[in-house]
Length: 152
Image (cartoon, rainbow, N blue to C red; front, side, top):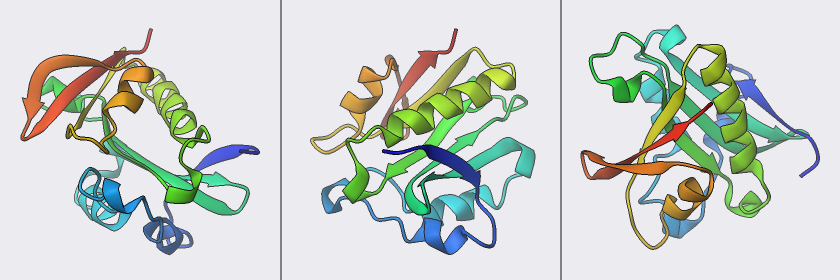
């Protein structure tokens, strides 16, 4: 990892983002970037935060959050919606980097915690999220467990 950075998804880079490929065994645990961007496209732009993780000119990951303070479910007030790191770049700190940037954005928006959900399983992201400070809440979102990370 040299100097990663996040960039907004634009017309110029959207196809690069959609080409991101995860490990085959992880496909059941995270939606493709194209699906994520389709979901983001139906929300007001101020409530969704999709970003591409670059290292140099190379796309190495994707992160998307929802910030919907008016939502009746506090789960969606500050929510990590998607995180993907390309198969060839996992284990190099890009996921941690993306989450640190997301934590900063959530704090900038006045949030004190970040929530997320994930499906449990052998190749799922649970150990990663728990290592980065998320704690299980005991609640579920559909078939996924919910985790929360305090930001302060």
